Length: 267
Ligand code: UDP
Image (cartoon, rainbow, N blue to C red; front, top):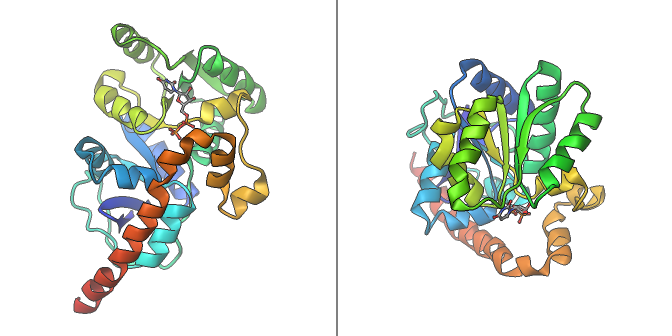
C-alpha cells in the first residue's frame, strides 16, 4: 500500500475497494485496528497536537477525507512517504492514479454493506441520546441482513466510560463506528483500542446523525463539486472558527510545493 505525505501526515493511496479489502483482512486477523478518515482540519491540528500526530502515524489505515486532501495530493504530487512507522508492509512507489476521496460517510456506507454481506456485527457509539438507536433501526431496514451488536449514545460521563468500553468488548462486534466528533473520537479509539478488542474501529463524526435522519448530507451536486464543507458551514455557522483551518491548510500546502519540487529533482 502506498502512502502519500501531506504536511507530515501519511495518507494511504487506495480506492474504496482496496480499503475494504484491507479492512476485511483486519477482521480476519481478529486483532484491533484503527482506521482514520483524515481531513485538512485534522492535518492542521496534528501540527500542534502530538497525540493526534501519533495517532495518524500509527493508524492502520488513513483515508483522504474530502476534496481538500485530494487537492493537496495533486499539488504536492511528490514522492510518497516511506513506510516507516506503520506495521504493515507498504511499497513506496509513485502512484499513477489520483488519490481517491473516501469520506467518513462513504466509508460508513461501505462498512455497513460489507457487514451486511459478510455477517459481521457492528456497534454504533455516539450522538445525542436516541441517535445511535434510531440510526441502528434505519440501517437494519436499509441494509438487509445487517446485524447491530449494540448502540450507546456519546454523552456518557467519565465514570461511565469503563462500563461503555466493557459493554462493547463483551458484545464482540467486528466493526465499531464512533461518532464523538474529531479529534476526540480518534483519541478515544486509540486510548481504548486494546480494551475494546474490536478488529475495525473508526471515527465517523456526525455520520450517525445522518443515518438517524437528524441531520442531512449536502445535496449530491454539492458533494460532486467538492462543496460539502460549504453546506455544513451554512447549516452550522458555529463551524466557522474550525473551518479557518482549511485556508491555512491550503496556504501551507502551497508553501510546501516548491520545497517538495526541489526535493524530487534532487533525487
Ligand atoms: N458528540 C457526542 N458526544 C460528545 C460530543 C459530540 O456524541 O461529547 C457527537 C455529536 O452529537 C455529533 C458528533 O459527535 O453526532 C459530532 O459531529 P460533527 O459533525 O461535529 O463531527 P466532526 O465534524 O467533529 O467530526
